[in-house]
Structures are given as C-alpha cells and as structure tokens.
Image (tube, rainbow, N blue to C red; front, side, top):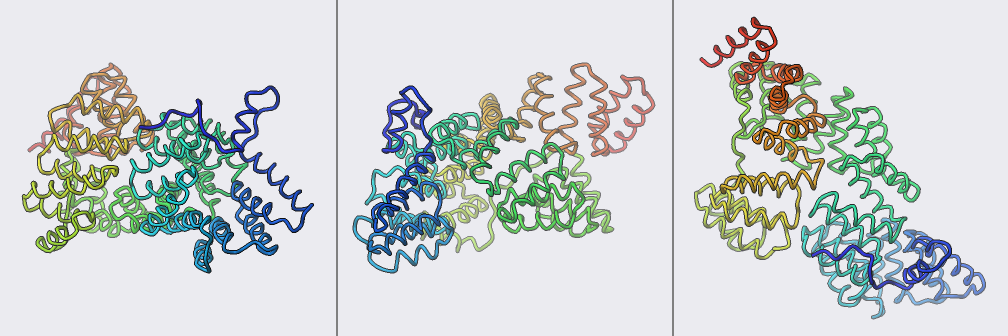
Length: 619
C-alpha cells in the first residue's frame, strides 16, 4: 500500500528540518535543498580558507558536492583531505563514489579494492559498489552489495531509494514499492524517493495518479531535474503539451545537456507532424540515446516520413536486432525496404508476421504487394484474401525450439529458473499437458509474487489451457503490480472468455482512463461504444486512434463510417468508407456498405457496380 502523499508529520534530515521551521515563519520562502547545499559549500570553503590544514571541513565539502551532483568537486575535496593527512582507509569509499558519479565505475571498484576500509565506512563502500553493479547490469553482485549496505546503514533513506531502484531493475515491483515507502517513512521530504514513487505509481495506477507524486517530489526539491523530466513525459502522454514544455524549460536550466530534453520535444514535434523539427531535435542528443529502443523507433518513423528510407531502415534494423519480437519495428523496417525499392527485403522482414495466425491486415497487404512485385502471384493472392477478411486469428502465446524431453528435464532440475521453466511450459502446452504447464507456472509465481511477469506467465499458461478463472486471477494480480497495456488487455481477454463481458469492458475503460495515450485502449473502447450504440463516444475513441496512426487502419475507418452514418452524417461516413475501400478494395463488407451509402446519396450506378463486384468476390 502506498504511503500518503507527504504533507503531514514527517521525519527529515537536519537541512530539510531547517526549511520546515523556516516555512512557518514570516519572511522569505524556505530554501531549496540545492540552495542549502550551495550555502553550506560557501561556508565550508570559507572555513578551509581560514584553516588550510582542515580535514573534516574538506570531507564535509565532498559530501556537499555529492548533494549537488558534482563528482569532480567531490573528488578534489577528498584528495585534498587525504593530502592533508586524512586516512585513505576512511575516505576510499568517498573517492570511489566520486569516480562513479563521473561515470568511471571501473576505477571506483578498483579504488574500493585497493586497501582496507574502516568499519564505520563498510556500509558506504558496499552502497557504492551496489550502485556500480546495478549500472553495469550485474544484478547478482548488486544484490549482495546492497544487502551488506543495508545491514550497516539500515535507516539511511537515500540508500533505500537505491535499493528500490535495484528492485525495480530486477522487475520486483512490490519490493521496489516497499523499499521506497520505507525511504519516505524515514525522510518524508526526500525528493528522489518521492520521484521514484511517482514512476512506480505511473506504471501501477496510471498517468494522472503519478502527477501528485511528481508534484510532491518537486515541492520537496524544485530543482530535481529527473523529476521535472519524468513529469514532463507524463504530461506529454496526457496531452498537456504546454505544461510539459514548461517543465522541460525548468529542467533545461538545471541539466542543459540531458538528451531527454530534446527527445521529449521531438516526440511532441512528431505527433504534430513536424518531422523536420523532430529530426533536428533528435540530432541534438549527440548519440547519447542511440541505444534506447524508444529513441530508435522514433528515429525510424521520422526518417521514413522525411523520405530517408535507408536511414529509417538502419534505425529499425538496429531496434529489431535488440528486440526481435518487436512487430512495430518489423513493420517499419518493411515499409522502409519497400519504399527504397527492395521488395524482397520487405517480404523477408514481414515473413515472421504473416506466418502468424493473428497477422494484421496492413502487414498482409504489404507482403502481398511485395510478393506480386517478385512475380509470386499465387502467394500474393492468398495474402490479399487473408487481409480482406479483416479478421485476425488467435495469437499463439508460446513457441519452443528444442527437444521436449531435454527441455522438461532442464526445467525439473531448476524449477525456479525462468530461462528453463518458460520453454518447458511451452513444450507442455504444445504436447497437450496443460496441467503440468500450469503447475510449473504456479511454482514460479509463488517464488516471485512481487513480479508482474510471474503472474502474467501463469495467466498465459492458464488461458492456453482453458483455465479461464485461474487466468483472470493471475492477470488481476499482475495488474495490481503493473496496470499497463500488457496486463490489462490480458485481463480483459480472460474476463471475456470467462463469460464476463461487462468486466472485460470495465477493464478496458479503466486502462483508457489511466493511460489516455494508449492506442489499444482507445481502439477497444471504441468497439465497446459501437456495441452499445454510443456513437459520439465511439467516434471520439476512433478519431484519437486515427489521429495517432493516420488513415492506414481499415477497421478504424470502417467503424468511423458506421458511426457517422448512424448519426445521420452521410457526408463524413462516405469520406471514411471511401478511404477504407481504397485500402481494402476486395473486402465484401466494405463494398456493400459503400454501395448503400452511395445509393442513399443518389449515385445508383456506382452502388450497383460495387454490389456486382461484391457478388463476384462472394462466388
């Protein structure tokens, strides 16, 4: 359970306690943490100037530099303290932290290993090591280091924030939530703790719920650049672009070189179809985000829109190498290859999609065009026919590659190793042994109840095995940890299959409310509104999807035409169905609906021609 948003009785550090006391008095507003650190730095520098041999003041100066995020200044202060007689055994952890803050984790680890460390600083040394191992992705070593740090410093709020970050990286959502809640209990105005809570709440409860936590973080520390940037991203996803840009402008005064500033502005520019501005902003990141999947995807979209097919293919290809199952990246790469005149390359890229029973109509049509270009008329006709149905099959949730017996034995030897268990679950399901698959998933879930993915795995196995009630239970538990699309859409599907369409619809609408930028939620909410004959709501949902993805989804265009026609606006209905027909000229349902609208608006000949064509296709 989340703690209350700070505002009542809290514990604080000495500096923040002064700010709280000052807030209750007449006079100037309380200082921000950054201002207090800067003032403290000036006092310490003055003391050192009066006493050049001072050691304690230099150590305090290093800690103030940590608070200001200045690793170079911290290193200088520690070295000066050591030069004036401070023991390396006591200051080695601080020197290591200074190196780590400057991005030199390897040097920091070597520093920690160079000699003994006094008992009083063992906890800090372990803390620094944990942070470096976490940065390097070595989660096992990070866990061991943080365990040692927590034993030595059990009531350090900043340490618990880093422990929460580690647990989040380890996909232990519940553990991260507990750790950051304890940090706030220790220090209710700890800006990083409040900001991290906001990030966790954003995933668990949605965008709007997270905003109050970002506001609390910025109330505690108005100069928290990370909180400002994350808040800006949240505001952007809510469509509040003016507020988003104001937050980014403030962040730019604190961290002018942070590449996220340019990336988020590029997202806004791309959504406004200003792709040249988006390209310019992306280039200003100077390679610092080139390995971030969302950055790669946006670059691919922008370059494709600007006619840079080769560059778009490069970005999409890089993303696909990192995420082979990213279907959006695969479609983008296919579009880039096709636009660049490489029909064979486009077809090969789309092959893993069209081989699926749930292939989308856009991919099927693109593959059909590529096959036709390659002279494979029969294959092109089959793909076109599949696309024209506009009916997607069921996705296969599991696939295996290996010997069934070997996979099963490997999982039996390590029943809590996901890398062993997941292929075994797949093999069990494919062999019809759903009971065994579910048993494996339950055992893994029981060992990882704070991990959403463990509940999702059980839900997927239960759904594949026809155990719909168990699937609903598992997906509900997953959504309690992560209320995003991947959990909520699974829950909606399981509820529908379990015979609870009302519950399924409620789950979809909850996703739409908590994640207004979710295309999938708007799409499904639109279909629900159509079923209920709520035409205005359906149009609102489908228009938002259309605005985001353009006129390339035949089903969206068809449903918009139906909704406008039901409202009596044949003009708009004709515009929508005409666009749908251009995309899918062989879909019989679209032709007949188009014919009815044509006839109703006085074009009997066109209506007759469309009906004749539909009849020929139906034979």
